[in-house]
Length: 531
Image 1 (cartoon, one colour):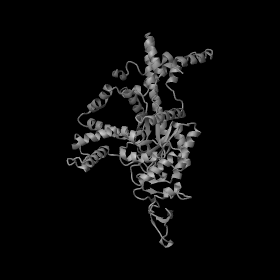
Image 2 (cartoon, one colour):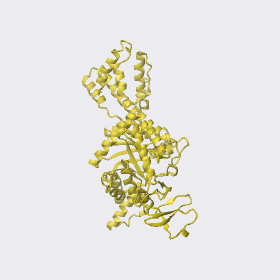
Image 3 (cartoon, helix red, strand yellow):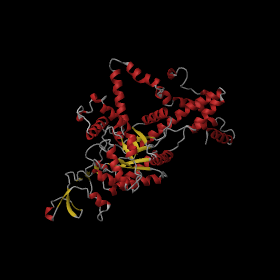
Image 4 (spheres, helix red, strand yellow):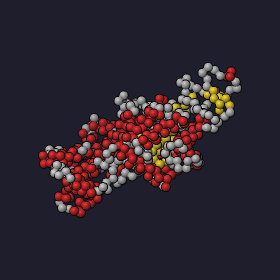
């Protein structure tokens, strides 16, 4: 319904009250409705799920239509990202937010900073989803509030052309509410626990849930050692649990991202159940490391023996009770994980790798696509990678393979600033610039995200300000490094009172109190210094 149609409907509703609602302005009520498009988290989940499904179809038709997001750990951070995206690009199309379990653990846990091991309160995840969407909805209200204020001025001035232009902008306003890919880690428990948390996340607004195939109580960050995976039957039960949660809540387009950590995981907690040779459990167990035995005399106390490829094998068991996979089987296990997940309910894949390498990712995806032709990935453009060193070494290796003279470069020290302006350094930067485009085209990556960007940008910007402010620059460090840049680059937060909702509150005071409203935005408000 358009703004004008809403006014008409509300006018009729007011008149039906026979004077009891005489103090209610249909224009103000219609304005408030427009500034609060989404009423519940489920409204958001259903709306954003359709966006993701449409984007996935667009990517299938044209791999240049890949999507991106940045991770965030606070509603304000997510809000400012979307405001910046709209400011610079005019649209939020194909831009999402990522909710990182790592950042929740490190920055939101009531226990204090924690490693990415699922030790934080599980409900913090759904709480952050709700917080993010509260801030994104407030960004809508803030932006529309400016349009409505401009409309009032145009109407007072009798400028009908300007008023019509503003009404068109209001009716066609693009929301800041975008899909959030939300990290549920390994499910925080068994399949029932996964289902319960998934429901909370969806009710908060999540249309996309990412779940990994690690053991919940042994969960590790994807870029740390000691990762332990579970048999496929355990992981698929959790995928089913998430799907049931979506269906129960009426989010039929809900998206599940199945993440595999098998490339860097050398351990499993359980031997898979298998009923016949070649079934899924048998395939999982075929990767277990062990020694062939000939008789029962080869079995010691506590040993575990399985039948593997028709032979009895005593599997290698660590003092922790965990079982070890054969070295070099990571890629094969990844491919099996991905095919199995996609054939049993997952929509997208996440392959956690140890480096950003298009060729490595493409090699695995091409094998997966032999079984599932439309397989697509969400990929972690992780700050855990040393991007500069990785791409410089990739260029070095490519040149060396081509027979090009690389004697001017020392491969182990390519991170050095002395290589910044060299031919190798510049080409490596070009490869980095093109990584997302190239891997979207060649390696099936539908969505690129950076998990922890604002963890690092917050630390970097704080370091710069602290260095100057507590040093010789004093107040100039803030004025020159922050406020002056905000003003000249048009950053909305320079008017922090307005950004926090002061003008919206003033307008509500006027709606509620009329001429008796005591407003904060008068001539003595120092925010007016910013024009």
